[in-house]
Image 1 (cartoon, rainbow, N blue to C red):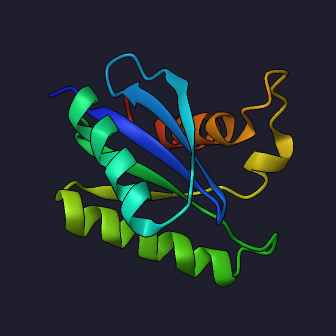
Image 2 (spheres, one colour):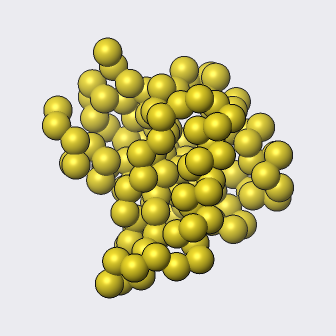
Image 3 (cartoon, helix red, strand yellow):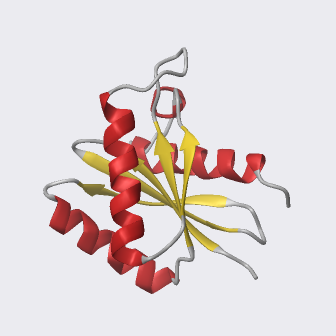
Amino acid sequence: PVQTILAVDFGTKKIGLALGNSLLRVARPLKTIAHRSNDSTFQEIQQFIQAWEITLLVVGLPRHPDGTAHAMTHRCTRLGNQLHGRFQLPVVWIDERYTSATVHDPQGDIDAQAAVMILEQYFASTPS
């Protein structure tokens, strides 16, 4: 079955979201949401999950350049676990080292573009 996928680039102030599906394997930026509180963040994400009938979540997992974990690694893991618990959807973590640093978006939506890169990495790592 075709999966509709929501990719998440988590930040302490903003969260980038991207959308794609397993058939076309194309990612597109969806939105950047402000991370004001966990409740408001989960409510906004839930709206996208319901509207787009999401079946899989892909969460960016930041690491140090040498691959070791740091504080944001643990926060992103926790976010993915909370998303799974709240929405009963499978979660896949994708190494997101350097995604935000390499994004060049003339419209300034760096976080949603970083989520696109995370989703593209997921597509590249899974068989078609």
